[in-house]
Image 1 (cartoon, rainbow, N blue to C red):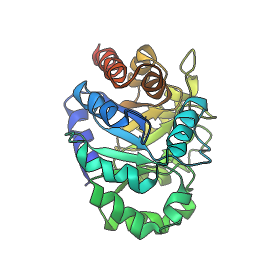
Image 2 (image 1 turned 135 degrees about the vertical axis):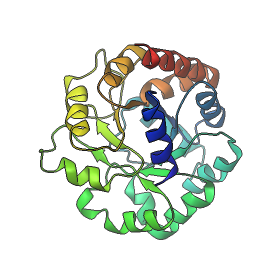
Image 3 (image 1 turned 135 degrees about the horizontal axis):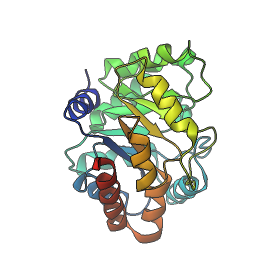
Image 4 (image 1 turned 60 degrees about the vertical axis):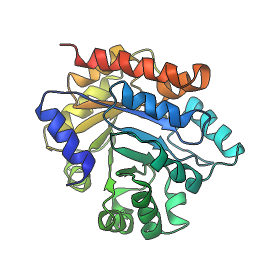
Length: 256
């Protein structure tokens, strides 16, 4: 059992709902934003490694990634900063398989482990093609966080859940990341389907846009992942605003 899996299960058993902010690695202030997340109640942080064709990301995260890339950020430069973050929560990376394929799964997984990363999310890597990566990840102690889509048939979900490590990413709606006026019905519906078939912690991500929606999602799921709303605050107002928002969401999901 990896660090994310162990800590998330223990917190869930204690009655705590889980909060995982997403921060774009390499964007100005990203290190302090992660520290602010940790200081204000995040249970883990998902660090985006910028990629030029981010198929799952909406306009806000695309803009942050593009700015980071234009500033010369690379996967190596992001990972080199991770040991300096000095936060006492697990960290995962989210990126695309091209950046794994280029160095090869074994080298990429080893680089994550060396940096102190606990988990990885690769949204464009299908379950059926995930063998080489999962083998390398397992060998290096990296938890592969699998994504489940709202369109997945019932017979597929147990297969995805069986391969998931750390937690299961319940994709809230079809489409890219971004802030929405309301939480999609598919978000809680899929989380309920997953909770019925697995004991792996289930977190809803994509389309969870504010503290109220996070509270709504965690009445069904074990926790939430929030990206666009975090990154927008980082871009508009800096790391302190991210910390304030994490505290607001923490209070909302802790409320009865």
